[in-house]
Amino acid sequence: MGSSVEQNILVTGGAGFIGTHTVVQLLKEGFKVSIIDNLDNSVIEAVDRVRELVGPDLSKKLEFTQGDLRNKGDIEKLFSKQRFDAVIHFAGLKAVGESVGNPRRYFDNNLVGTINLYETMAKHNCKMMVFSSSATVYGQPEKIPCMEDFELKAMNPYGRTKLFLEEIARDIQAAEPEWRIVLLRYFNPVGAHESGRIGEDPKGIPNNLMPYIQQVAVGRLPELNVYGHDYPTEDGSAVRDYIHVMDLADGHIAALRKLFDDPKIGCTAYNLGTGRGTSVLEMVTAFEKASGKKIPIKLCPRRLGDATAVYASTEKAEKELGWKAKYGVEEMCRDQWNWANNNPWGYQKKR
Ligand code: NAD
Ligand code: WQD
Image (cartoon, rainbow, N blue to C red):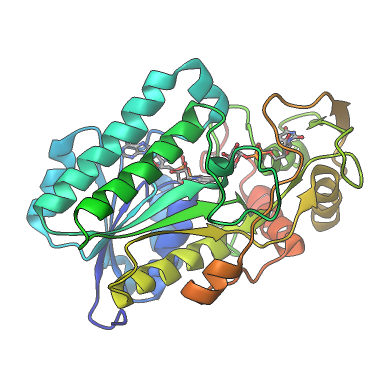
């Protein structure tokens, strides 16, 4: 089954970083899209820009509802109005440090929200889901590249919500085999849409490397703290698998097609990464090259809980989803800089 019959997709958290980029691709691929987002970590301007990017005709196939997954009534309202063929479930809180200080907020938002979603989907007989999991479920992997059948472990409450939600998905599918669920384990999503109109816009001081580098480049922050320069890696800094958000968006289309086409999919996990590792210092150099800006750095002690090197095995996604990342670090930095340069204060004028 292709998308020619105009499948209708509910996208939770569709106003966020990965959500907006995925919605652009979904609309371009001919899907109808309904977003539910409580705008806790996003702004409506991002959805307006998605509309602008896809143009007036495709915009008619996008609807937005401000709602919260913790309120079952908000989800029920959507399902009682229309039939959804599948759900892409991005909505969730994702700040590791915040989850350590306030685990109840994470369990309430990520777990209760998702359970409400499953309940409402089951009631309305919509049993296909693409779920945003994370490489965090590999903890500090003993071997690299990470394979989908590695033992799973969580290092913090945020990671535990992803681990629990993976287990919950497996249990639901085992009990009711008609469910088809794809768990996508993203590695380190970076970059932005090539137009420079949508991108990542974290509130407050960024926790993640690329948004931090971006804010140094535009002069919002004075220097980058490089956490760890004594790792057993080539240049002493930690290694991660950065993946362009547009590749990630296309990975969701591939996962949806798999759900529609493969009745035997059950509940299956796939890594979405490039399979290549890049160190923090290599990333800084690549960003300097793309932006023409100097990124002053300060070498600092390691960040608690960080692994030395994490990157994906991409074999399973390539073989079973027919998906492979197209972009490298150069394009990631080019597009991230284009977004930063055009929107130094993100979606707001200035904060
Ligand atoms: P994001 O914060 O930009 O987007 C998440 C969106 O969900 C936000 O717009 C937020 O307002 C919304 N939301 C949160 N709780 C909600 C609720 N209860 N009801 C309705 N809407 C709610 O984050 P993102 O980077 O786009 O991440 C999307 C998903 O991918 C998350 O589940 C995240 O855990 C996962 N993930 C992200 C990364 C990453 O580094 N960005 C890596 C791995 C996995
Ligand atoms: C990358 C590297 C840092 C900031 C996190 C979550 C993970 C997933 C992706 C959601 C590390 C170093 C960072 C800085 C630095 N998210 N760094 N200075 O930790 O690999 O993964 O985001 O699921 O769950 O844990 O990503 O971007 O925070 O860090 O030196 O100011 O950059 O120490 O080596 P991480 P990150």
